Length: 66
Image (cartoon, rainbow, N blue to C red):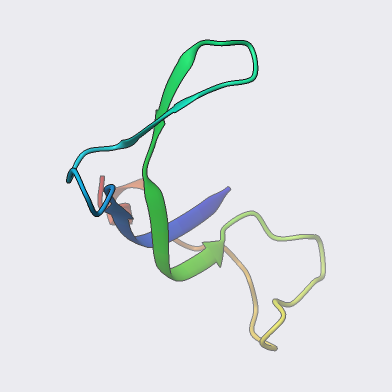
């Protein structure tokens, strides 16, 4: 599990999601994700995160903002 804090950015021209055509001919939409903070909530056993801290994932469900 991963917690990503940031914002979804729409298409600059339209203010809506980007619309595109997939390889199979169907339409799709997407937003650009601008992440300010990323936390890996599922620790590997005995591992520390890449910044030297303990990646214990002590965040409760009530702490998730959505």
